Length: 83
Image (cartoon, rainbow, N blue to C red; front, side, top):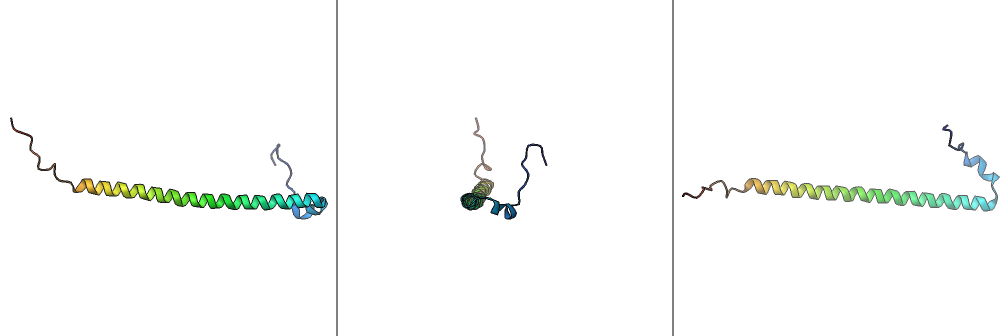
C-alpha cells in the first residue's frame, strides 16, 4: 500500500457498525455513485458512436472527392495558346 492511501474497508462487515443515519447516507451516496457511473457510461457510448459517424462522413467525402477528381479529363486536351 502506498504511503498516502487509507486502508481498504470491507463494507459488508463494517456496515452494521455505523449508526442508522450513517447507513442511510452511505446507501444514498452509493446509489448516486451508481447512477453517475451509468450516466457516464452512456455518454461515452454516445460519444463513440458520434465520433464513428463523423469519421465515416469525412472519409466518405474524401473518397468521393478523390474519385471525382480522378474522372475529370477536361485539362487533358488542353493546348497552350499559340503566339
